[in-house]
Image (cartoon, rainbow, N blue to C red; front, side, top):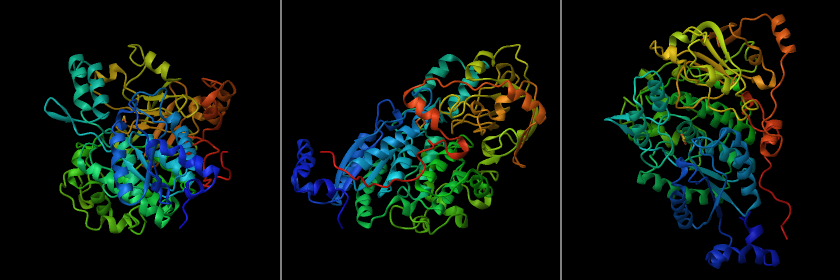
Length: 569
Ligand code: FES
């Protein structure tokens, strides 16, 4: 089989000289250019992305496997997205990274690619970009951190940060204890070890069939993570020889499996947006309602924070994702193909479970109300989402008066004011935090409760916004309201005191204000202006789709394939 890379390295002319000669300055011997598969290792390593800071070492193990299988590995960097540092939010740049990935793969002599991802947005960004090229590709996740340990107990990334900061605000935790917990939480390489967005996306990689079995849960520092990297390197060479392209794996069945697995692991609401965007790139017809219909009868089997008690390290020792998928039985398309050339059913047929406290059987599920509920109503005609497993059961049907914040600055300026007109029955409404409004749709939807409510011992209230929330967060939080306020969605028209009705079992979110009044309010509404009128911010603002469509840029869905018509000289 003549490989794509032969169009560069196989030429016996001036261009071939140029393509090979400069590469040889890296000490690469001539026989590597003999037509063997060239494997790109797409690396999101960065010291500014602590969750991916160990990726150079992982890449070295991938290279070992590639060499061993007769391939020619070439590592290349793409922009990295560190969740904890980047402002205003990494989500603003997910699509930019996907473009970097797509063009880096297509423009270079790559036959197959191993995608190295870990921190939240790096996973969807790499899958989106690679899907638009549709070469053989395999994703290797970087793995979660070891469990956090603080004063004799396990603490989880993110989840305990939200908890601790609320305890400090209501006087239940000292600042000294708070600062001490910092070093105790993040004590090894790896990404968040709760079932936050990074772990959720690592589970979707495996459920989609894009990662090798057990990819999701092996801790970053466990030697078996490096064995998996080695095996990923070996396998991608075989995939090139088999012409096993992404489009053969990312079928509608694969996405249905992933949606059900997100429900079974109590995964992050962020997976909704990311999977819609990935499906859009590969050309699979997936929409927001699929999340509700496919996930509705899926029980949550995994007892992990934020919904439960344990952490990713415990999950791996209990059997990892293969044990969960096996337990799902007929809820999974067992004939879906995966990157190792076997079906999902074959991969999990013998998967053992070693701890039924962590991975519960379907007959005794951890929570019955799992998945993602998609709400409709005049406040969100194009949908909004809520995660029942993270919500307070008594608040899932609730009617209350809106306390409105026009933007995040307004929220922080007033939330703790003693004279804020709020009680525990109120509904907190935050506007202008959607894709265009913030911009980038940040994780601020789990807005902190007013201090005076916390002091009463109340820990949850209904909150509504066009923002996202961290997968490590919890609460009765309605997210992704579409259309967002900044585009003139009804959310923009909500005023203090308006009654809002939430009924999760009826999938309803209603603003109890007559249409005539909303029309009047709309006449005096003015759209917010973009933060910058140039550069990527402008491209993003002008082209970003709403959350219910995956928040991709409107010209990116679909694939161009990997063909490049012209050479460079
Ligand atoms: Fe990187 Fe959570 S901050 S995965």
